[in-house]
Structure formats: structure tokens, C-alpha cells
Image (cartoon, rainbow, N blue to C red; front, side, top):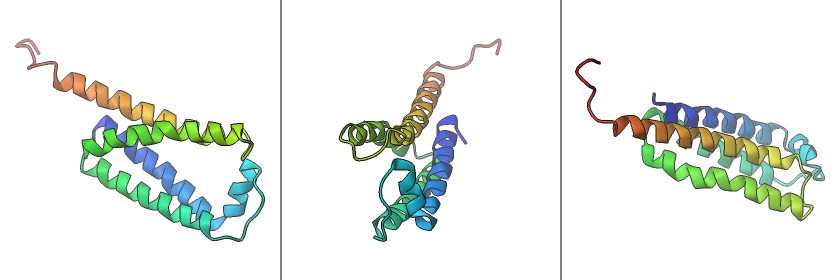
Length: 130
């Protein structure tokens, strides 16, 4: 498994944990953000969708689907912007930015791994002494 694939795989594990948490204890999750309890199904549905995205990331990592690695970057980097906006509009507590930061750090890891692997791929053939 390449470094970029490993980064996406680890991120998928995070998504699995988050998705399961939303399915099992959605109101506990809401309390982290200072949002009132709900009995609506939408948060559990979000948990299911997060689990599905995690499944796609596991498959992308397993099969080295580099275009998916690249496509995930703007999505994962942008989440922090949404959380900052939600905090600015007083929809949630500032702790929400931490969740966006996890996505941004994971995306940065993937980006660095992709760039590192691209540099190795373009470095040319090994010298005779290698």
C-alpha cells in the first residue's frame, strides 16, 4: 500500500468511527457542538452516509485509485471552511473547527504523500551505483 493509500485508509477508519458514533449516539455528538438534542433521523442518516464514504475510501486505498486520492483533497480541505462559517454564524461551538481540522490534517497527509510519490516516480532511473 502506498503512503497516499495508507493516509486515505486511516482517514476511512476515522470516518467509520464517526459514522458509527452518529448512528449509535447522535445526541451525544450534538452535545459536543452545543446543539440541542433531537429525535430526528437526519443525524443518523448522516452517519450512514459517512460510513459509505469511508467504504469508498477503503476501496480506493486498497486498489490504489490515485484519481480518488486527488479528488478527495478539495473536499477534505474545504470542510474546515464550513465549520469556521458555522461557528462564525453561531450555529455551533468553536470545538466544531477541530473536526474540520482533522479533515484538513488528513488531506495534508494525503497531499504530501502524493507529491512525495510523484517526485520518486519522476526522479528517473536509478544510477548504476544504486
